[in-house]
Image (cartoon, rainbow, N blue to C red; front, top):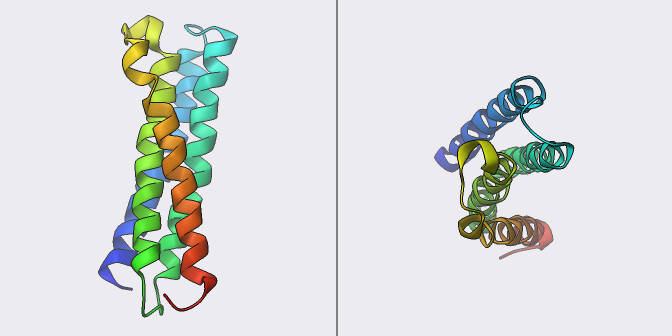
Length: 132
């Protein structure tokens, strides 16, 4: 395994463990404190974190045996940024009433995370399209 591959597999493993913990915390600890709408936002963050954790794992695993990993490395970083920005902002938005988080600060962060996810997928596509 290359250093980059190992790094993204480690980040994905950590993200997966955190997604389970964050999801369980939301389902058990936050459920009585959040409205149904807020809980749905929180769960959306957990779902997207899981989906993109798997994509990050795939990017890391595809680096093995691949001589040109430029697009895969970029894809991994965009998936990581997307998880932090998109899912992280949704967690904070859902909990804004109990944490006094200003929504105006988080408004632009969520779509930025979505753009990172899209970029990650496009870069993953480019990594297997052919020779770079």
